[in-house]
Length: 124
Image (cartoon, rainbow, N blue to C red; front, side):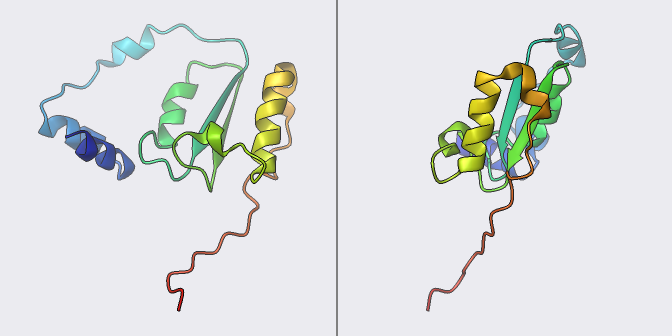
């Protein structure tokens, strides 16, 4: 059952998956009661994340007044593990956000999705 729900999230079918297993939606008042967060928040997403898709960042970001939301085109679930030496821009942005949170909103993020990725379907 979990695989069906996880897969449905990737295709934007979460509501349908919840209805199929009789899970009631959370009332919108639940989110309205959350207090705004004023300290610096970095939201990272992988564009290829089928578990928690980037669209969920928009929902999360509503209560953060001082936040930077980034989506890494080559990233998947567990985006922090992608911040390795082979992804120097992502690594730099994460470290800068941690070490100098007061400057997070002024970070130059233009390097983030500049890799020239080519998908090769046939290796022959």
